[in-house]
Amino acid sequence: MADRRRLLAWGAVGLPLALLGVLGVEAWIAANREYLPDEPAYVLESRVAPTSGASNGPAVRLVVLGDSTAAGVGAPGLAESLPVQVAQRLADDLGRPVDVTGLGVSGARTVDISDEQIPLLVDRRVDAVLIVIGSNDVTHATSPSAMAEQTRGMLRAARRNAGDAALVLGGIPLFGSADALAQPLRLLVDTYARVLRRVQRDTAAEENVRFVNIAVEASPRFVGVPEAMSSDGFHPAPVGYGFWADALAPALAAELGT
Image 1 (cartoon, rainbow, N blue to C red):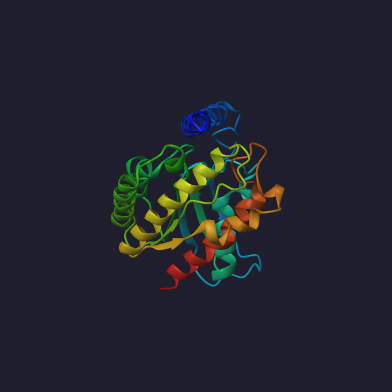
Image 2 (cartoon, rainbow, N blue to C red):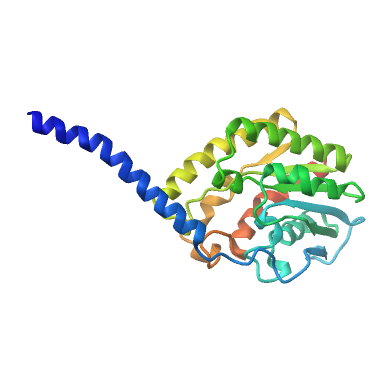
């Protein structure tokens, strides 16, 4: 009996330590693997016309802020990038051309949007601002309290600098299709993403900003569609960005219509 208790005690200590070791190795591998280049080979600016060719008004001036997903990483061509795919759907919905500019930066976290990207709105005439951010806050373990404070500051700064522009926040996606993260690390990251995503949603509601839950409205469509992810197993591919755009564009159209 004593030997059995001793074995159970060692198991109670050893299993968590072994799990921590596995997670540490997986995190090191994920951090040191090769990802797509941080910057695409194009400038993220474009005028997008409605597919029908008809135009019912002046162009909508859209600016997209965020991380690598807003910077075009994972999209080989300009038309395949998330900002331009969102703009195309918005143009088709409104029947108006859309002038879109992407100011996203690879690796950006929520605090970086306030410090580095929103100031770029000051001298721009903008009708709509889309912010897609949060994945790097998950991987860098931003605390929930800091996430709430930084999200609130970001949204208020966007309001100040963009005037009466429509404002939409795209939330943290699921990490279930991110093969760059091995299990059980991927499960751990996805679990923490749920915590920060809830913070984003609640803070956006407090600030009266429309929140798009990409994890609910787009991420499930990645299941069984390997072509939705890029070759690095972390960033969406054009098909995946199309799923995101399908969720984000209607929110922008609704805000512009109010």
